[in-house]
Image 1 (cartoon, helix red, strand yellow):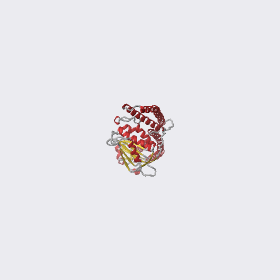
Image 2 (image 1 turned 60 degrees about the vertical axis):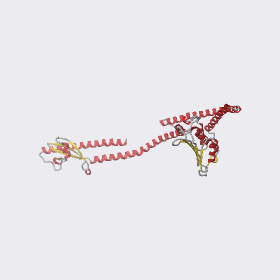
Image 3 (image 1 turned 90 degrees about the vertical axis):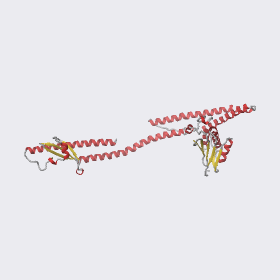
Image 4 (image 1 turned 135 degrees about the vertical axis):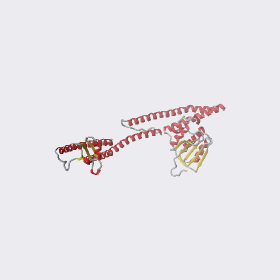
Length: 395
């Protein structure tokens, strides 16, 4: 804007200066014409130092402009910058070409001074306006970044994250909308968590009766089928109770130094499922052995239930990797993480989707990180990274 205003002022001043110069030159031409005619009428020869130029002394550029006409015409002469610019005016008087010139150096210096002052003013204005503009933009961007950061925290599971925006502008409205959304999401998730906990607790009493009744049935094929279904139902209820405790944040880890390789081997052995365990070195981890056993067991069970053999378990330092050679994790599970009662894809088989959910929850309790990915060319890979034991090197 400052540049545009400066250009307009420069052009306006330049036009006015040229107009004044032409007027002065034409006025001098009129006086010279009158002087020449007066000398001719008096029968005198022109004075020795006339205020005009006549005949062959007139510049060719001015003669070209005048042509065969009587004039008057003007011409701005910048041929000799060191001597300054001149404004010429020419015409014909009694058949004689007559020309005068007016010095324009003063006006040109005034225009240059004006341009210089406008540049200084523009720079001074920019020196003030640019920092203020950047500061104003940064304040708005900072508020937007805070809103984006709050949204990311909510996505990662921090349901208490809020923007706490104030004001009545558009950014404040966005902040308020994010806070309202977070409140609604938190209430919905808490409602689902309460429902899961209530269902699990309500099922415990009739389930205990089913277990007792199944144990009293006479041995038969039908009895074995009933006992198997009761066992599955009991496992589901136990999973629901565990998830409800994890949701409530009531779980606390009881850490101790454990030989990681031996613990993983024992956990795999108790599943009664085939899996190849590879232990590199003699790693020791500071963790809760019961919860780690639960995580490893769930990962191995998930690999057999939804993947294909061979199932490989590798212990390297404080990292445990469980891999199968099935279709891999579905994209939805990789994008959004495990969700209860959803296995993600039909080709991964049947299930309740609770095993991975519990594994992720228990890994948070013991301070570990569980990462799910797909291997090439096929297969699902679950990587559990445990915190290093204080004062010891991994592996």
